[in-house]
Length: 378
Image (tube, rainbow, N blue to C red; front, side):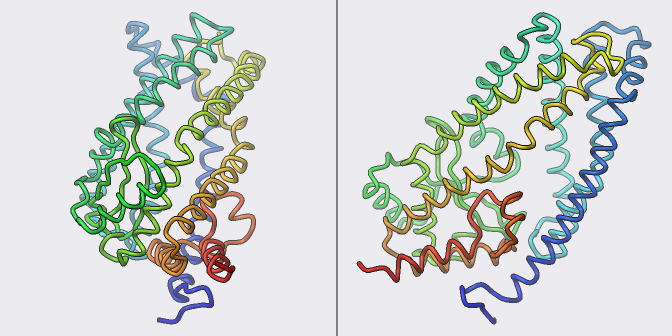
Protein backbone atom coordinates (compact mmCIF):
# COMPACT_ATOMS: atom_id res chain seq x y z
CA UNK A 1 0.00 0.00 0.00
CA UNK A 2 1.35 3.42 -0.99
CA UNK A 3 0.48 6.27 1.36
CA UNK A 4 0.82 10.02 0.92
CA UNK A 5 2.50 12.46 3.28
CA UNK A 6 -0.56 12.53 5.54
CA UNK A 7 -0.96 8.77 5.79
CA UNK A 8 -3.82 8.30 3.34
CA UNK A 9 -3.87 5.39 0.91
CA UNK A 10 -3.03 6.88 -2.48
CA UNK A 11 -5.07 4.33 -4.44
CA UNK A 12 -8.11 4.60 -2.17
CA UNK A 13 -8.02 8.39 -2.38
CA UNK A 14 -7.88 8.25 -6.18
CA UNK A 15 -10.92 5.97 -6.09
CA UNK A 16 -12.65 8.32 -3.65
CA UNK A 17 -12.13 11.25 -6.01
CA UNK A 18 -13.56 9.27 -8.93
CA UNK A 19 -16.62 8.35 -6.90
CA UNK A 20 -17.07 11.92 -5.67
CA UNK A 21 -16.89 13.21 -9.26
CA UNK A 22 -19.55 10.71 -10.33
CA UNK A 23 -21.79 11.63 -7.40
CA UNK A 24 -21.50 15.37 -8.09
CA UNK A 25 -22.46 14.87 -11.73
CA UNK A 26 -25.37 12.63 -10.81
CA UNK A 27 -26.48 15.12 -8.16
CA UNK A 28 -26.48 17.91 -10.75
CA UNK A 29 -28.65 15.83 -13.09
CA UNK A 30 -30.90 14.84 -10.20
CA UNK A 31 -31.31 18.48 -9.18
CA UNK A 32 -32.17 19.48 -12.75
CA UNK A 33 -34.80 16.73 -12.95
CA UNK A 34 -36.20 17.75 -9.57
CA UNK A 35 -36.39 21.37 -10.72
CA UNK A 36 -38.19 20.37 -13.91
CA UNK A 37 -40.59 18.20 -11.91
CA UNK A 38 -41.28 21.06 -9.49
CA UNK A 39 -41.97 23.48 -12.33
CA UNK A 40 -44.32 20.96 -13.92
CA UNK A 41 -46.27 20.60 -10.69
CA UNK A 42 -46.30 24.32 -9.93
CA UNK A 43 -47.39 25.31 -13.44
CA UNK A 44 -50.46 23.16 -13.74
CA UNK A 45 -49.52 19.61 -12.78
CA UNK A 46 -50.65 19.88 -9.17
CA UNK A 47 -53.87 21.57 -10.27
CA UNK A 48 -54.60 18.74 -12.71
CA UNK A 49 -53.96 16.18 -9.98
CA UNK A 50 -56.26 18.08 -7.62
CA UNK A 51 -59.03 18.17 -10.22
CA UNK A 52 -58.69 14.43 -10.82
CA UNK A 53 -58.89 13.69 -7.09
CA UNK A 54 -61.95 15.92 -6.69
CA UNK A 55 -63.63 14.16 -9.63
CA UNK A 56 -63.64 10.98 -7.55
CA UNK A 57 -66.27 12.58 -5.28
CA UNK A 58 -64.75 11.18 -2.11
CA UNK A 59 -64.88 12.85 1.33
CA UNK A 60 -62.57 15.80 1.84
CA UNK A 61 -60.16 13.90 4.09
CA UNK A 62 -59.93 11.06 1.56
CA UNK A 63 -59.29 13.52 -1.26
CA UNK A 64 -56.38 15.03 0.66
CA UNK A 65 -54.89 11.65 1.50
CA UNK A 66 -55.26 10.48 -2.11
CA UNK A 67 -53.64 13.66 -3.44
CA UNK A 68 -50.70 13.36 -1.04
CA UNK A 69 -50.19 9.66 -1.74
CA UNK A 70 -50.37 10.18 -5.51
CA UNK A 71 -47.94 13.09 -5.30
CA UNK A 72 -45.51 11.00 -3.25
CA UNK A 73 -45.78 8.09 -5.68
CA UNK A 74 -45.16 10.34 -8.69
CA UNK A 75 -42.12 12.06 -7.19
CA UNK A 76 -40.72 8.74 -5.94
CA UNK A 77 -41.07 7.10 -9.35
CA UNK A 78 -39.07 9.92 -10.96
CA UNK A 79 -36.37 9.79 -8.28
CA UNK A 80 -36.08 6.00 -7.99
CA UNK A 81 -33.44 5.50 -10.74
CA UNK A 82 -31.17 8.01 -8.99
CA UNK A 83 -31.60 6.24 -5.67
CA UNK A 84 -30.70 2.94 -7.29
CA UNK A 85 -27.56 4.23 -8.98
CA UNK A 86 -26.25 6.29 -6.05
CA UNK A 87 -27.49 4.07 -3.22
CA UNK A 88 -26.87 0.60 -4.56
CA UNK A 89 -25.10 0.27 -7.89
CA UNK A 90 -22.13 2.52 -7.16
CA UNK A 91 -21.79 1.37 -3.55
CA UNK A 92 -21.50 -2.21 -4.81
CA UNK A 93 -19.18 -1.29 -7.68
CA UNK A 94 -16.80 0.63 -5.40
CA UNK A 95 -16.82 -1.98 -2.64
CA UNK A 96 -18.71 0.09 -0.08
CA UNK A 97 -21.76 -2.16 0.16
CA UNK A 98 -21.98 -5.78 1.29
CA UNK A 99 -25.75 -5.89 0.94
CA UNK A 100 -27.42 -8.09 -1.69
CA UNK A 101 -29.96 -6.54 -4.02
CA UNK A 102 -32.88 -8.24 -2.24
CA UNK A 103 -31.76 -6.67 1.04
CA UNK A 104 -31.47 -3.27 -0.59
CA UNK A 105 -34.99 -3.61 -1.97
CA UNK A 106 -36.27 -4.56 1.47
CA UNK A 107 -34.69 -1.48 3.03
CA UNK A 108 -35.98 0.65 0.17
CA UNK A 109 -39.51 -0.60 0.81
CA UNK A 110 -39.19 0.32 4.51
CA UNK A 111 -37.83 3.74 3.62
CA UNK A 112 -40.60 4.40 1.12
CA UNK A 113 -43.22 3.25 3.62
CA UNK A 114 -41.91 5.67 6.22
CA UNK A 115 -41.70 8.41 3.59
CA UNK A 116 -45.27 7.86 2.46
CA UNK A 117 -46.58 7.90 6.04
CA UNK A 118 -44.63 11.08 6.82
CA UNK A 119 -45.77 12.79 3.60
CA UNK A 120 -49.43 12.05 4.24
CA UNK A 121 -49.28 12.96 7.94
CA UNK A 122 -47.30 16.18 7.52
CA UNK A 123 -49.20 17.24 4.41
CA UNK A 124 -52.58 16.61 6.00
CA UNK A 125 -51.72 18.55 9.18
CA UNK A 126 -50.27 21.39 7.10
CA UNK A 127 -53.45 21.64 5.02
CA UNK A 128 -55.50 21.70 8.20
CA UNK A 129 -53.37 24.52 9.64
CA UNK A 130 -53.58 26.52 6.41
CA UNK A 131 -57.37 26.21 6.51
CA UNK A 132 -57.96 27.20 10.13
CA UNK A 133 -55.09 29.71 10.60
CA UNK A 134 -54.31 31.18 7.18
CA UNK A 135 -52.26 34.00 8.72
CA UNK A 136 -50.38 32.22 11.50
CA UNK A 137 -50.26 28.65 10.20
CA UNK A 138 -46.47 28.79 9.95
CA UNK A 139 -46.07 29.51 13.67
CA UNK A 140 -48.34 26.62 14.63
CA UNK A 141 -46.48 24.36 12.17
CA UNK A 142 -43.16 25.39 13.71
CA UNK A 143 -44.30 24.63 17.26
CA UNK A 144 -45.66 21.25 16.20
CA UNK A 145 -42.41 20.46 14.38
CA UNK A 146 -40.46 21.05 17.60
CA UNK A 147 -42.57 18.48 19.42
CA UNK A 148 -42.21 15.98 16.58
CA UNK A 149 -38.43 16.52 16.46
CA UNK A 150 -38.10 15.80 20.18
CA UNK A 151 -40.24 12.67 19.93
CA UNK A 152 -38.30 11.39 16.91
CA UNK A 153 -34.95 12.08 18.60
CA UNK A 154 -36.13 10.03 21.58
CA UNK A 155 -37.49 7.18 19.46
CA UNK A 156 -34.75 6.99 16.82
CA UNK A 157 -32.40 4.55 18.64
CA UNK A 158 -35.18 2.28 19.85
CA UNK A 159 -37.68 2.36 16.98
CA UNK A 160 -36.41 3.89 13.74
CA UNK A 161 -32.77 2.78 13.44
CA UNK A 162 -33.57 -0.83 14.46
CA UNK A 163 -35.83 -1.05 11.42
CA UNK A 164 -32.65 -1.06 9.33
CA UNK A 165 -29.82 -2.17 11.65
CA UNK A 166 -29.39 -4.43 14.65
CA UNK A 167 -28.02 -3.08 17.93
CA UNK A 168 -26.33 -4.75 20.85
CA UNK A 169 -24.53 -3.38 23.91
CA UNK A 170 -20.78 -3.09 23.43
CA UNK A 171 -19.42 -6.50 24.39
CA UNK A 172 -15.69 -5.75 24.55
CA UNK A 173 -15.01 -5.25 28.29
CA UNK A 174 -11.64 -3.58 27.66
CA UNK A 175 -13.11 -1.04 25.25
CA UNK A 176 -16.06 -0.44 27.55
CA UNK A 177 -13.64 0.20 30.43
CA UNK A 178 -11.68 2.60 28.23
CA UNK A 179 -14.87 4.51 27.46
CA UNK A 180 -15.93 4.66 31.10
CA UNK A 181 -12.49 5.93 32.06
CA UNK A 182 -12.61 8.58 29.33
CA UNK A 183 -16.07 9.68 30.45
CA UNK A 184 -14.86 10.00 34.03
CA UNK A 185 -11.83 12.06 32.95
CA UNK A 186 -14.04 14.30 30.81
CA UNK A 187 -16.60 14.62 33.62
CA UNK A 188 -19.33 13.65 31.18
CA UNK A 189 -22.28 11.61 32.51
CA UNK A 190 -21.88 8.09 31.18
CA UNK A 191 -24.23 6.97 28.44
CA UNK A 192 -24.67 3.52 26.98
CA UNK A 193 -22.30 2.34 24.27
CA UNK A 194 -23.86 0.16 21.59
CA UNK A 195 -22.46 -1.77 18.66
CA UNK A 196 -24.37 -1.37 15.41
CA UNK A 197 -24.18 -4.40 13.11
CA UNK A 198 -23.32 -2.39 10.01
CA UNK A 199 -21.20 -5.09 8.35
CA UNK A 200 -24.35 -6.91 7.25
CA UNK A 201 -24.98 -4.08 4.79
CA UNK A 202 -21.94 -1.84 4.44
CA UNK A 203 -18.17 -1.76 4.75
CA UNK A 204 -18.20 1.82 6.03
CA UNK A 205 -17.19 2.65 9.59
CA UNK A 206 -18.72 5.32 11.79
CA UNK A 207 -19.63 6.42 15.29
CA UNK A 208 -22.30 8.79 16.53
CA UNK A 209 -24.33 9.99 19.47
CA UNK A 210 -28.05 9.46 19.13
CA UNK A 211 -31.13 9.49 21.27
CA UNK A 212 -32.50 11.72 23.98
CA UNK A 213 -32.79 11.26 27.72
CA UNK A 214 -33.00 7.57 28.57
CA UNK A 215 -32.44 6.55 24.95
CA UNK A 216 -29.23 8.60 24.57
CA UNK A 217 -26.26 6.45 23.59
CA UNK A 218 -22.96 6.33 21.76
CA UNK A 219 -23.15 4.04 18.76
CA UNK A 220 -20.14 2.51 17.03
CA UNK A 221 -20.30 0.24 14.00
CA UNK A 222 -18.94 -3.27 14.17
CA UNK A 223 -16.81 -2.41 11.14
CA UNK A 224 -15.05 0.24 13.23
CA UNK A 225 -14.45 -2.21 16.06
CA UNK A 226 -13.15 -4.87 13.68
CA UNK A 227 -10.88 -2.78 11.47
CA UNK A 228 -9.44 -0.30 13.99
CA UNK A 229 -7.06 -0.81 16.89
CA UNK A 230 -8.52 -0.22 20.40
CA UNK A 231 -6.36 2.90 20.78
CA UNK A 232 -7.81 4.30 17.55
CA UNK A 233 -11.36 3.50 18.58
CA UNK A 234 -10.67 5.25 21.88
CA UNK A 235 -9.89 8.52 20.09
CA UNK A 236 -13.16 8.20 18.15
CA UNK A 237 -15.12 7.58 21.36
CA UNK A 238 -13.46 10.62 22.94
CA UNK A 239 -14.64 12.69 19.98
CA UNK A 240 -18.21 11.53 20.61
CA UNK A 241 -17.88 12.35 24.32
CA UNK A 242 -17.03 15.91 23.32
CA UNK A 243 -20.43 16.31 21.70
CA UNK A 244 -21.98 15.37 25.03
CA UNK A 245 -19.72 17.63 27.08
CA UNK A 246 -20.43 20.67 24.92
CA UNK A 247 -24.15 19.86 24.61
CA UNK A 248 -23.89 19.80 20.84
CA UNK A 249 -27.19 17.95 20.29
CA UNK A 250 -29.01 20.60 22.35
CA UNK A 251 -27.15 23.44 20.62
CA UNK A 252 -28.01 21.93 17.25
CA UNK A 253 -31.65 21.63 18.20
CA UNK A 254 -31.85 25.25 19.37
CA UNK A 255 -30.06 26.59 16.30
CA UNK A 256 -32.11 24.41 13.96
CA UNK A 257 -35.32 25.52 15.65
CA UNK A 258 -34.45 29.19 15.32
CA UNK A 259 -33.44 28.74 11.69
CA UNK A 260 -36.60 26.84 10.83
CA UNK A 261 -38.74 29.57 12.43
CA UNK A 262 -37.15 32.21 10.20
CA UNK A 263 -37.43 30.00 7.11
CA UNK A 264 -41.11 29.25 7.76
CA UNK A 265 -41.95 32.89 8.43
CA UNK A 266 -40.27 34.11 5.24
CA UNK A 267 -41.68 31.26 3.14
CA UNK A 268 -45.20 31.89 4.48
CA UNK A 269 -44.95 35.55 3.53
CA UNK A 270 -43.73 34.75 0.01
CA UNK A 271 -46.31 32.01 -0.47
CA UNK A 272 -49.10 34.33 0.65
CA UNK A 273 -48.10 36.75 -2.10
CA UNK A 274 -47.58 34.22 -4.88
CA UNK A 275 -50.15 31.46 -4.59
CA UNK A 276 -53.01 33.17 -6.41
CA UNK A 277 -50.76 33.89 -9.40
CA UNK A 278 -50.35 30.15 -10.00
CA UNK A 279 -54.03 29.30 -10.22
CA UNK A 280 -54.23 28.11 -6.63
CA UNK A 281 -57.76 28.74 -5.40
CA UNK A 282 -57.02 29.48 -1.76
CA UNK A 283 -54.12 29.42 0.66
CA UNK A 284 -55.27 25.99 1.83
CA UNK A 285 -55.77 24.49 -1.65
CA UNK A 286 -54.08 21.08 -1.89
CA UNK A 287 -52.67 22.08 -5.27
CA UNK A 288 -50.57 24.72 -3.54
CA UNK A 289 -48.40 22.24 -1.62
CA UNK A 290 -45.76 21.84 -4.38
CA UNK A 291 -45.42 25.61 -4.63
CA UNK A 292 -45.11 25.90 -0.86
CA UNK A 293 -42.49 23.15 -0.81
CA UNK A 294 -40.55 24.91 -3.57
CA UNK A 295 -40.63 28.22 -1.72
CA UNK A 296 -39.47 26.54 1.50
CA UNK A 297 -36.61 24.90 -0.38
CA UNK A 298 -35.49 28.12 -2.04
CA UNK A 299 -35.62 30.11 1.20
CA UNK A 300 -33.63 27.51 3.12
CA UNK A 301 -31.06 26.88 0.36
CA UNK A 302 -28.76 29.84 1.16
CA UNK A 303 -28.58 28.71 4.79
CA UNK A 304 -27.13 25.30 3.93
CA UNK A 305 -23.48 26.43 3.62
CA UNK A 306 -23.78 28.28 6.93
CA UNK A 307 -25.18 25.18 8.63
CA UNK A 308 -22.30 23.10 7.24
CA UNK A 309 -19.76 25.69 8.41
CA UNK A 310 -21.20 25.58 11.92
CA UNK A 311 -21.14 21.78 11.84
CA UNK A 312 -17.48 21.72 10.79
CA UNK A 313 -16.62 24.11 13.61
CA UNK A 314 -18.42 21.87 16.11
CA UNK A 315 -16.68 18.75 14.79
CA UNK A 316 -13.27 20.46 14.87
CA UNK A 317 -13.85 21.35 18.52
CA UNK A 318 -14.70 17.72 19.23
CA UNK A 319 -11.46 16.67 17.49
CA UNK A 320 -9.44 19.03 19.69
CA UNK A 321 -11.19 17.71 22.79
CA UNK A 322 -10.40 14.12 21.81
CA UNK A 323 -6.73 14.96 21.35
CA UNK A 324 -6.58 16.76 24.68
CA UNK A 325 -8.39 13.96 26.50
CA UNK A 326 -6.52 10.97 25.07
CA UNK A 327 -3.09 12.62 24.59
CA UNK A 328 -2.73 10.29 21.62
CA UNK A 329 -2.38 12.31 18.42
CA UNK A 330 -0.68 9.45 16.57
CA UNK A 331 -3.63 7.09 16.89
CA UNK A 332 -6.08 9.91 16.23
CA UNK A 333 -4.29 10.67 12.95
CA UNK A 334 -4.24 7.03 11.84
CA UNK A 335 -7.90 6.65 12.80
CA UNK A 336 -8.88 9.63 10.64
CA UNK A 337 -6.85 8.30 7.71
CA UNK A 338 -8.45 4.86 8.03
CA UNK A 339 -11.95 6.31 8.28
CA UNK A 340 -11.56 8.34 5.11
CA UNK A 341 -9.90 5.56 3.15
CA UNK A 342 -12.38 2.90 4.25
CA UNK A 343 -15.41 5.12 3.61
CA UNK A 344 -13.97 6.53 0.37
CA UNK A 345 -14.09 10.06 1.71
CA UNK A 346 -11.97 12.59 -0.17
CA UNK A 347 -9.38 13.78 2.33
CA UNK A 348 -8.40 16.94 0.47
CA UNK A 349 -11.44 18.34 -1.36
CA UNK A 350 -11.54 21.52 -3.37
CA UNK A 351 -12.63 24.57 -1.33
CA UNK A 352 -16.03 24.76 -3.04
CA UNK A 353 -16.66 21.06 -2.32
CA UNK A 354 -15.86 21.59 1.33
CA UNK A 355 -18.14 24.63 1.45
CA UNK A 356 -21.08 22.87 -0.22
CA UNK A 357 -20.88 19.28 1.03
CA UNK A 358 -18.73 18.76 4.12
CA UNK A 359 -20.28 18.60 7.60
CA UNK A 360 -16.88 17.55 9.08
CA UNK A 361 -13.41 18.96 8.55
CA UNK A 362 -11.70 17.18 5.63
CA UNK A 363 -9.43 14.32 6.58
CA UNK A 364 -6.19 16.11 5.80
CA UNK A 365 -7.13 18.99 8.11
CA UNK A 366 -7.89 16.53 10.90
CA UNK A 367 -4.52 14.79 10.49
CA UNK A 368 -2.74 18.15 10.38
CA UNK A 369 -4.47 19.14 13.61
CA UNK A 370 -3.17 15.99 15.31
CA UNK A 371 0.34 16.58 13.98
CA UNK A 372 0.34 20.17 15.14
CA UNK A 373 -0.49 19.05 18.67
CA UNK A 374 2.12 16.32 18.54
CA UNK A 375 4.72 18.83 17.39
CA UNK A 376 3.84 21.46 19.98
CA UNK A 377 5.69 21.60 23.31
CA UNK A 378 4.24 19.49 26.11
